[in-house]
Image 1 (cartoon, rainbow, N blue to C red):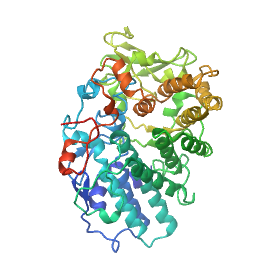
Image 2: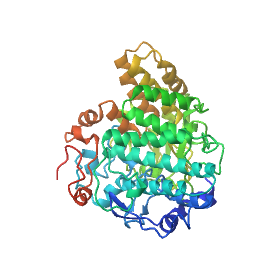
Image 3: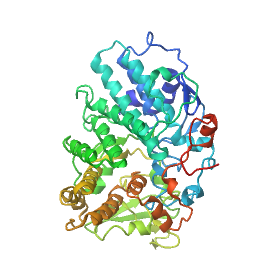
Image 4: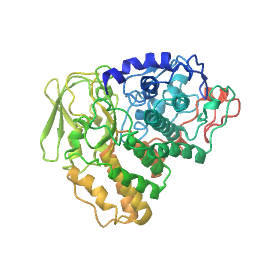
Length: 506
């Protein structure tokens, strides 16, 4: 991203000065506006300033204090265990961490966490209302229509993305999509599942109906705008929505539309996470020295000196660095899902040299592998200026394969999954039954997309989320925990109008 346009350190100031929104209640945003259509939202600079604030949750930096209620929250894509990214991993079989016993043991409830912990994801409902406000104000401007639509499109994608994230964790909420209601203080009920999903879909369809001159397909070759959402992101969100709701025909169509946009697989798996804005990436959270990526430092044991990854050619990738926090690791049971010679293991450290030059392999002091993925790190950390990959083309191929199998069996699906497997240098699939393909694609997505925040969604879609938790000894896991609870504070403030998710009681 252009530092003059998207300097993350300016976002907090812009939120407070340029958007001037305040939310007295979590579900009931109040907007106190000194800025009106008459004195604001006239130029492209005005549009951009307002839009930057909507990008603020989509960062990997540690977090910010929201100017609306003065509560600190973590960004969606950092390594704090309260974030969307980490709670999508730590509740599954792909990542282990003991820092949050309730998360580890499935003992969370509406009052388990303080409000600010829940709000790290839940508070993004405020940004949905802010997006509604921005869309409304830009649409009322008398600026050039192409320019207006370029910024409206981005705001609609960000609103749809936030709504999808909230839906993934909490189900449909009472988001505010009508600008006329933004100043209302009375609680409103949650939308129905159909209404909520239709609203996400409509925002994305509105964007895709626009001309490419109003919003480009991608920004991979545009360094100044890398980090802005594009038509590719809109299509990717549609694909995820359709996969989540098991609309298989729509998912297949959405995925094939992305295939026609010019994305492609990187020749080597590790290069996806080394080469910035490469042609496999549909969206990555831009990171820099000013807005760094903390994830990797959480993975390294205290005694490490050199870590080793083994690629498909049995060549060793050396990662030299010092101690980390070793808060998260990949369980060896998950690591063993990778076959010998799988090139994706070239991004996972399975043995290391300690400070005495002793070789440490799996055992009591090395309880799980290091799912590093970003093998280009240099220096001791804890911060790295490495973009965090969120959406990429391999997921599209695997999703299309799964959607085809669910509709008509695997025969037409092999061509897509085998592209991913060929890159990993593992044998192609053939001769599977529909059920065998369904089980295999879940494992394949785990191997391909580990540490990218999709495992929880995948397990839930396949009906395995609770069963896998029970299988690894978490006897507290119950069927209703496919959704997180609405925080108690929200239920209280909702005055009986906002319903709790089924299965959760105070």
